[in-house]
Amino acid sequence: MTASRQQPLRNAIHAATGLAAWWVLAVPEPWRMRGLVAMLTANLALDVVRWRGGRGRLDRALPGVYRDPEPLGVSCATLLAVGYLLATSLFPPPAAAAGILALALGDPAAAVVGRWYGARRALAGKTWPGSLACFLASFVAILLIPGLGLMPALAGAAMAALVERRAGPLDNVLVPVAVAMLAGLWVG
Image (cartoon, helix red, strand yellow):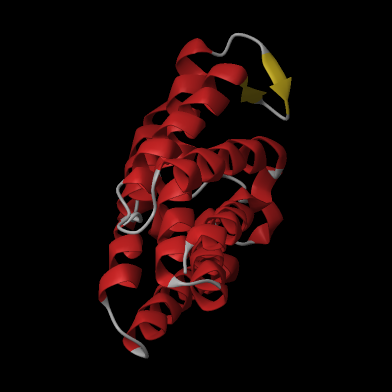
Protein backbone atom coordinates (compact mmCIF):
# COMPACT_ATOMS: atom_id res chain seq x y z
CA MET A 1 0.00 0.00 0.00
CA THR A 2 1.42 3.37 -0.97
CA ALA A 3 1.99 6.13 1.57
CA SER A 4 -0.82 8.24 0.10
CA ARG A 5 -3.26 5.34 0.49
CA GLN A 6 -2.02 4.58 4.01
CA GLN A 7 -2.65 8.03 5.44
CA PRO A 8 -6.50 7.92 5.41
CA LEU A 9 -6.48 4.58 7.23
CA ARG A 10 -3.93 5.83 9.77
CA ASN A 11 -6.01 8.99 10.31
CA ALA A 12 -9.20 6.98 10.78
CA ILE A 13 -7.54 4.69 13.33
CA HIS A 14 -6.03 7.71 15.07
CA ALA A 15 -9.45 9.37 15.34
CA ALA A 16 -11.05 6.13 16.56
CA THR A 17 -8.68 6.07 19.52
CA GLY A 18 -10.68 9.05 20.79
CA LEU A 19 -13.08 6.44 22.18
CA ALA A 20 -10.50 6.11 24.96
CA ALA A 21 -11.67 9.53 26.21
CA TRP A 22 -15.15 8.17 26.84
CA TRP A 23 -13.60 5.09 28.47
CA VAL A 24 -11.68 7.37 30.84
CA LEU A 25 -14.84 9.32 31.67
CA ALA A 26 -17.17 6.34 32.10
CA VAL A 27 -15.14 3.49 33.56
CA PRO A 28 -14.20 3.52 37.25
CA GLU A 29 -10.82 2.60 38.68
CA PRO A 30 -9.09 0.18 38.62
CA TRP A 31 -10.58 -0.79 35.23
CA ARG A 32 -9.94 2.62 33.69
CA MET A 33 -6.17 2.23 34.03
CA ARG A 34 -6.22 -1.50 33.31
CA GLY A 35 -7.86 -0.83 29.95
CA LEU A 36 -5.23 1.72 29.01
CA VAL A 37 -2.43 -0.57 30.19
CA ALA A 38 -3.92 -3.33 28.01
CA MET A 39 -3.90 -0.92 25.04
CA LEU A 40 -0.23 -0.12 25.66
CA THR A 41 0.66 -3.80 26.15
CA ALA A 42 -1.02 -4.79 22.87
CA ASN A 43 0.85 -2.07 20.99
CA LEU A 44 4.16 -3.08 22.56
CA ALA A 45 3.50 -6.71 21.63
CA LEU A 46 2.96 -5.66 18.00
CA ASP A 47 6.19 -3.64 18.15
CA VAL A 48 8.05 -6.74 19.35
CA VAL A 49 6.64 -8.72 16.42
CA ARG A 50 7.86 -5.97 14.07
CA TRP A 51 11.31 -5.88 15.70
CA ARG A 52 11.67 -9.65 15.34
CA GLY A 53 11.13 -9.63 11.62
CA GLY A 54 7.35 -9.84 11.41
CA ARG A 55 6.93 -6.49 9.69
CA GLY A 56 5.72 -8.04 6.43
CA ARG A 57 3.07 -10.13 8.17
CA LEU A 58 1.84 -7.13 10.16
CA ASP A 59 1.69 -4.96 7.05
CA ARG A 60 -0.45 -7.60 5.33
CA ALA A 61 -2.70 -8.04 8.39
CA LEU A 62 -2.91 -4.32 9.23
CA PRO A 63 -2.20 -2.51 5.95
CA GLY A 64 -1.31 1.13 6.35
CA VAL A 65 -1.02 1.10 10.12
CA TYR A 66 2.75 1.37 10.40
CA ARG A 67 5.06 3.94 8.87
CA ASP A 68 8.26 2.90 7.25
CA PRO A 69 10.30 3.53 9.34
CA GLU A 70 8.53 4.40 12.58
CA PRO A 71 10.21 7.28 14.42
CA LEU A 72 12.14 6.37 17.58
CA GLY A 73 11.91 2.63 16.83
CA VAL A 74 8.51 2.22 18.46
CA SER A 75 5.22 2.63 16.67
CA CYS A 76 3.25 5.84 16.84
CA ALA A 77 0.43 3.71 18.27
CA THR A 78 2.63 2.75 21.21
CA LEU A 79 3.57 6.38 21.80
CA LEU A 80 -0.11 7.32 21.63
CA ALA A 81 -0.96 4.70 24.27
CA VAL A 82 1.84 6.04 26.49
CA GLY A 83 0.42 9.56 26.15
CA TYR A 84 -3.10 8.44 27.00
CA LEU A 85 -1.87 6.44 29.98
CA LEU A 86 0.25 9.31 31.32
CA ALA A 87 -2.57 11.86 30.93
CA THR A 88 -5.00 9.54 32.71
CA SER A 89 -2.63 8.66 35.53
CA LEU A 90 -1.60 12.27 36.20
CA PHE A 91 -4.83 14.26 35.79
CA PRO A 92 -8.54 14.02 36.62
CA PRO A 93 -10.72 12.15 34.09
CA PRO A 94 -12.23 15.22 32.35
CA ALA A 95 -8.77 16.74 31.87
CA ALA A 96 -7.33 13.43 30.61
CA ALA A 97 -10.28 13.05 28.24
CA ALA A 98 -9.56 16.54 26.88
CA GLY A 99 -5.96 15.56 26.16
CA ILE A 100 -6.98 12.29 24.55
CA LEU A 101 -9.58 13.89 22.27
CA ALA A 102 -7.25 16.75 21.35
CA LEU A 103 -4.71 14.25 20.05
CA ALA A 104 -7.18 11.76 18.59
CA LEU A 105 -9.00 14.37 16.51
CA GLY A 106 -6.56 17.29 16.28
CA ASP A 107 -3.59 15.35 14.90
CA PRO A 108 -5.45 13.71 11.99
CA ALA A 109 -7.22 17.00 11.20
CA ALA A 110 -3.81 18.67 10.98
CA ALA A 111 -2.53 15.91 8.70
CA VAL A 112 -5.51 16.03 6.33
CA VAL A 113 -5.73 19.81 6.04
CA GLY A 114 -1.97 20.24 6.01
CA ARG A 115 -1.72 17.92 3.00
CA TRP A 116 -4.62 19.61 1.18
CA TYR A 117 -3.73 23.25 1.72
CA GLY A 118 -0.20 23.37 2.99
CA ALA A 119 1.92 24.52 0.11
CA ARG A 120 4.35 26.25 2.48
CA ARG A 121 5.78 24.22 5.28
CA ALA A 122 7.05 26.35 8.12
CA LEU A 123 8.44 23.97 10.70
CA ALA A 124 9.33 20.26 10.56
CA GLY A 125 6.85 19.66 7.75
CA LYS A 126 4.01 21.33 9.65
CA THR A 127 1.75 23.82 7.91
CA TRP A 128 -0.23 26.78 9.20
CA PRO A 129 -3.50 25.43 7.76
CA GLY A 130 -2.79 22.10 9.47
CA SER A 131 -2.12 23.82 12.78
CA LEU A 132 -5.38 25.76 12.46
CA ALA A 133 -7.25 22.51 11.73
CA CYS A 134 -5.67 20.93 14.82
CA PHE A 135 -6.83 23.90 16.88
CA LEU A 136 -10.40 23.79 15.55
CA ALA A 137 -10.82 20.01 15.87
CA SER A 138 -9.37 20.05 19.38
CA PHE A 139 -11.57 22.99 20.38
CA VAL A 140 -14.78 21.25 19.28
CA ALA A 141 -13.69 17.96 20.88
CA ILE A 142 -12.88 19.53 24.24
CA LEU A 143 -16.21 21.37 24.24
CA LEU A 144 -17.92 17.95 24.20
CA ILE A 145 -16.45 16.94 27.55
CA PRO A 146 -18.82 17.37 30.48
CA GLY A 147 -17.49 19.79 33.07
CA LEU A 148 -15.27 21.71 30.67
CA GLY A 149 -16.40 24.83 28.88
CA LEU A 150 -15.28 27.57 26.56
CA MET A 151 -12.07 28.67 28.30
CA PRO A 152 -10.60 25.16 28.80
CA ALA A 153 -11.54 24.35 25.20
CA LEU A 154 -9.78 27.46 23.86
CA ALA A 155 -6.70 26.98 26.03
CA GLY A 156 -6.54 23.23 25.40
CA ALA A 157 -6.95 23.65 21.64
CA ALA A 158 -4.20 26.26 21.52
CA MET A 159 -1.92 23.96 23.53
CA ALA A 160 -2.72 21.01 21.23
CA ALA A 161 -1.92 23.02 18.09
CA LEU A 162 1.30 24.39 19.56
CA VAL A 163 2.59 21.05 20.85
CA GLU A 164 1.52 19.15 17.70
CA ARG A 165 3.42 21.72 15.66
CA ARG A 166 6.61 21.62 17.74
CA ALA A 167 6.91 18.12 19.28
CA GLY A 168 7.91 16.05 16.25
CA PRO A 169 7.64 12.30 16.74
CA LEU A 170 6.80 12.73 20.42
CA ASP A 171 3.54 14.58 19.73
CA ASN A 172 1.53 11.44 20.52
CA VAL A 173 2.94 11.49 24.06
CA LEU A 174 3.14 15.23 24.65
CA VAL A 175 -0.17 16.51 23.26
CA PRO A 176 -2.46 14.53 25.61
CA VAL A 177 -0.29 15.29 28.64
CA ALA A 178 0.09 19.01 27.89
CA VAL A 179 -3.60 19.49 27.12
CA ALA A 180 -4.66 17.47 30.20
CA MET A 181 -2.34 19.54 32.38
CA LEU A 182 -3.86 22.77 31.11
CA ALA A 183 -7.48 21.51 31.21
CA GLY A 184 -6.84 20.28 34.75
CA LEU A 185 -6.68 23.89 35.86
CA TRP A 186 -10.45 24.10 35.29
CA VAL A 187 -11.36 20.74 36.84
CA GLY A 188 -12.31 21.05 40.49
